Length: 305
Image (cartoon, rainbow, N blue to C red; front, side):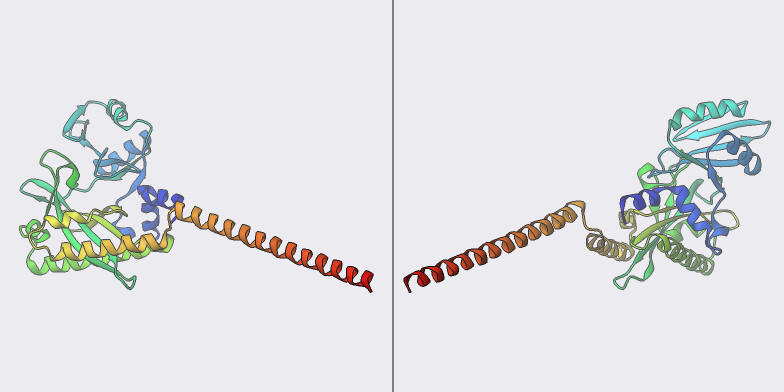
């Protein structure tokens, strides 16, 4: 994968557009649009709650939640701060201070399920095996920080066994059905992205469940952290994830040679051409010298005769 492809794959907007092209994935993609004052107003009127997030970013950094409250009041939360406004324009002005010149997206807000009054979502790990076939290798719950709107481990979230988070919401049989559905969705997503980017070997799909247990694709991470699975008591899932993760890195070294290696190869070719050219010149000079010596001997012999 070249640098321009890697840049495109880091773009949440670009990945969203690729997912929307697949009929069975599209229903699970929350409406996502590029940020502007107009889209904030229209989507807030439509959904009552939306998320604003950087187009390129990791660990939940820069994510903000906007809500329209009763009595035409507005509020947004950034990290642990919540600010309220009487007018939406005032909120947008305040919001823009956090955004700078970066490109942002606005996404339909999902009212996530809770565990002990804290939001949680789900990470589905999908990786290629040694044969290159996609497998769902791990699934884990991420319990959000009690005062934050994101669930990322690096932002204070807590990785937990999914059954522990779901046991108050679903029976064991329903949980098994849900996990099967999420694993299949993860593999479908990986296969869809592979059509455009054939060389990547793993993704982490972040999925939020609403109160009807509909899975919503919050984000697709193409550089997922395998170590969150080490937080589980049962290490079997972690062992599989990390072994596939190492395999992906080994394959990456083979498939995508570094720029230094490419330059070295080019230099080798140039040097080889130089040596070949020099050898040809040397051979030609020797042949010319030999012909001259032969001619000189003949002339000498003729004079003696």
